[in-house]
Structures are given as structure tokens and as C-alpha cells.
Length: 289
Ligand SMILES: [Zn+2]
Image (cartoon, rainbow, N blue to C red; front, side):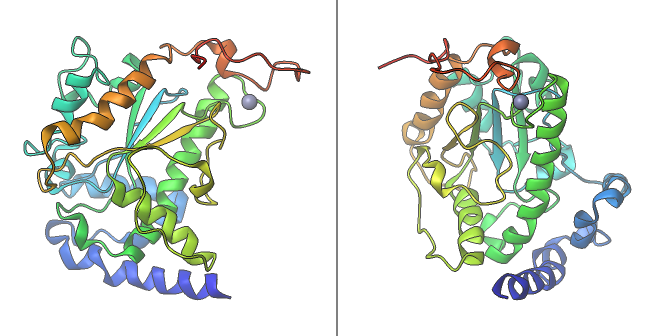
């Protein structure tokens, strides 16, 4: 009952919310088009022709890491590249910490080749919602956007699992998913908790997350062997943090990422083809205590 009411309200909110309040040059874009599934291709093409758009860049194979932003800035929306705004520190930090190896990645112009070159993909929760100030988005805007976000991730999972001959549908899960800011992760968690009539969380720690917080619609496997979820600091120019505080969680994540070989060894990733073990030995890439 509650869920129905919420969804209806969220749907109306999307139509009259941020999308129409702020989207000057993209006025014909309709949030509702995103939910139509099969029609979304032409809607996407139309958005591009109208001068903007930032698609999910996840490739077709299982990834080591997916970086999840809040929503594209106007700059990223116009350029078609993640975190392209010169005031955003993301690319400097990714290269400095080695998440984006400097010899392979120049900057945002390589966001579409990193899936192949180093197993890193990009997506925003608010896919298709440009705007520099994330506080302009209401929780309801984000709750609505999350449906499209999960749909993108599910499509990726399906495609990535298929690419390695997986039968269980989960082997294509990325090894790490890192939210590039607390805000979008907390919004997703709370959208879920609101539906379930649970108390909202105020904040989450930086670094690895408790998988019990993950929303019901989370498409990837929930164990550490499937996907570990992290939260990082925001690299937006608008976020007030010292450089060392901002970079620390990225450096920690980079250390985790370095333990995952690339390309991913198929034998390790494709677990559903292995005979169910009586007693499973720990995966060779994990360092023991
Ligand atoms: Zn499988």
C-alpha cells in the first residue's frame, strides 16, 4: 500500500521536479521516457541531438570496479565524459592513486576505454539528470532515478555474465562498486528504507560498506566474493575537504583494486561452473590476515 503511494508520488515528483525546473537547454527531455525500457534508445539519441547526454560506460565484460557518481554536471552532460568539469578533482585523484594508471589514462577523454584497458566502468545514479549542485535533487528525484540506475546495472550484469558463459547470472558482477560521494549511496539506502518503513540512515562511513545496508533492488551479488561496495569522498569542486582527507579513501581503494588481477582470470570469476565444493579454499587473490 505504502509502496504504491510512494511510487505514484515519486513519479509525479519526477515530472515536476528537478528535470523540469533546471534543465534549460534540454526542455524536451522527459524523465518519464527513461522508464519505458524499449523506447529509451531513441530517447537517448534525441537527448544527444539536443546537445547533451552522458551514458553509462560499463562495457560488455565483468569489471574490477564501477565508480558511481551522483549525477552529471552540466559540463559532463555537454562533453559526454564523466567528471569532465575542470573544477572536479576526480581525474587527478584517479591517476595519482593509480586507480587510473597514468600510462593508460590521460583523463576524462579515456572514460570509454577504461573498461577494456583496466576494468573500470562509470555510471551515475541520476543518469540523464544534469546539474552541478547535487543538493538541488530531492530524495524523491533520486528515488525515481534509482530505478533507471538499477536497470542499467542489471543490463550490464546480464551482458557481462553472458560474455563468460555464466549460468547463475551473478558471475559477471563487478568486484568492487565505489560511490564517489556519500550522498548518492545514502539516498539509495534511504529510498529503499522508506519503502520498507524503516528508519533512515543519517550517514555512512567512508570505505567498505556493510552489505546489509544494500537496497533490495541491488542487482549484484551481496557477498564479498561477488561485489564489495565502497563509499568515497566527493571530488566535486563544491565539496569542502582538505586534499589529504579527500584522497585517502581513493588510495585505500586503489590498494584493494591492485589485489584484483586484470584481465580477470576466467576461472576465478566463473564460479557457477565449478563443482560445488565440500570445503572451498580461499580465492588466491585474497590476502589472508
Ligand atoms: Zn555464474
